[in-house]
Length: 365
Image 1 (tube, rainbow, N blue to C red):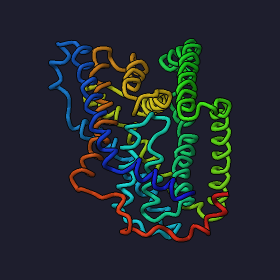
Image 2 (image 1 turned 30 degrees about the horizontal axis):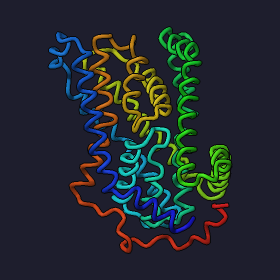
Image 3 (image 1 turned 90 degrees about the vertical axis):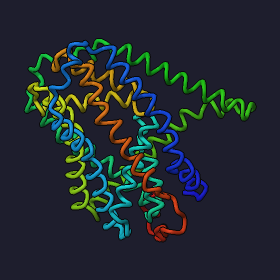
């Protein structure tokens, strides 16, 4: 990977730029959530908010922050495997930067590139940083491949009328989803063609082929990354990868368990396993929402999916509370930690990058 690419990553994911974007996006989104709460919640029910047991709110916040612990430990594990001397605090800062990066990009993109840039800065060779980032996603995938079927079995999902209602709704609305997806894809193609045409009017044919070529390159890169990750884990890191799957599971159980704590705070009965399963549905639908951090769409998805499991009068306040705990609190705390401590993330020269890039040539291939 070229030095110019590293420089672009460092510039794009400098903490100053991330915080400036967060300071604009988050207050606007939070104001929208407050307005939705005030408008949608019955005044009588809103007046009963005092009966909420705030001990469950504190529990929900702690559960939502649990992924920070799990992801930091994973980075430390791979640091030991690759003999990179990364401190727990640097691993923690990398996780926070990834969360902040995810808040200002569409959910499908996430904060992976921010994480990649920080890993490179903290001593991982480029290929190894890419591998660690990919292994994190792979650990998540393995965990859900085990947890979701188990959750379906424990909750007898195939007999649950609420789940069946959601499923039938998704099936009946698939033409709308496809139409929206095609519209967004068309807009992206038009914007891309226009941008290419302005910068290079004589290169229309190359522009028209750019989308398909990018897709092919992306699929090829994913295939190569998966092969490299699988080969590396099989030869060198079975125990480390299994530990990462465990810590990834702890983090996801925490974040997906926050809603159960919030609902119990209002005195309602919950099925934590069913709520875990539905949280996966919500977070999965969020990946199809093109707004930064899935703002707006996340709230709509939550209210539609949990309507019927949570009493109707409590849906607006539970939607706002869930979003506040799992998104605004995590991003806000991460931003505050960076701003207050005045961290200079990309302090070139303070951390020496891993010099064994040549050793990674096999991984890059």
